[in-house]
Amino acid sequence: MAENTASNDKSRYDILQNDKGEILIIIQQRNGGAENPLFVYDGTENALLYRSHESTVFFNDIAEGARTPLKSVSELQIVEITDDDVIREYKVPVRIVKDVKALLD
Image (cartoon, rainbow, N blue to C red):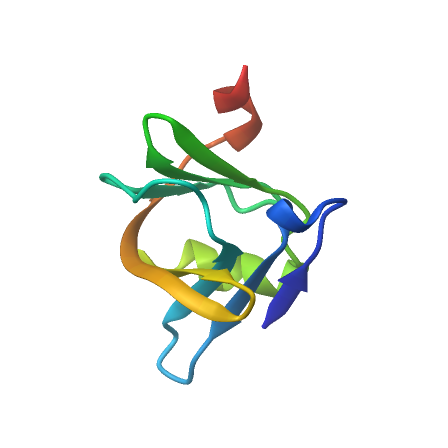
């Protein structure tokens, strides 16, 4: 569905959707496991993935074509990779908010 690359490799992510409407997001591996993860989205180009109290991933430049599908699911699958090897996978609930950037202040 969409691929986004920020200025450094740590911010690279891919967003894919299958025929059933399920969404998979591929990110670079982060340190530590995900504890009660939550994907926070406002329907724009920005989103946050809370992995744990110590680890949050900021998504920017989400492609226009990925925005409506992201708003229409209640959970998604996260896959963390290193050098094309899957390190961990987990399901994450999606919470829709008014403004993701307001959460960063």
